[in-house]
Length: 243
Image (cartoon, rainbow, N blue to C red):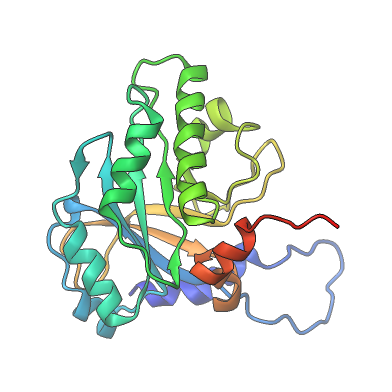
């Protein structure tokens, strides 16, 4: 069961002690668990997930490129809202496409509600495009979505791709890293990550196909800071009055 990870993850996030034994009571590490899905997982029975293998959050694919819409996005998006599962939508970025067109496509398909996780830009392919062009167009996507919603989008990538192409370009944005391992990711730049996709072979009740598993190393209140609220967004983008 997915829920047993809450105890296993204690060993991944707890400090490692060496030398002489230290007699100290260690609190259980707080780790929130989530999945990310697309049409590849087929039609998900979210009611079963909520009852039999509950998750704290779920990311769902919404769009790709300048015109693709995930065929199960609306089903996943609406069911997550109905069940009160924290939800986030992601856009699969195509480096050969224009950043502005892709941003507007995403915004036209995703209806954000207060408490939804910040939008995600999934960047994991160069598509044969020069890396500097890919970075430039990705930045355009991020800037448009941030300007529209008033919240910094989350960047998703696998660790190798991130460190090779993206590191140092988007350090101000929250980061979701894929690294399929029992050991948490350490980035050579020293940047910290916010979400870790640690497996693509998860078995979750209610999802018929293997699914990506993720953790957020924090409390629900900490996760809430990565969520969109209109009032908070307006305050963040409001012009400053000079004396």
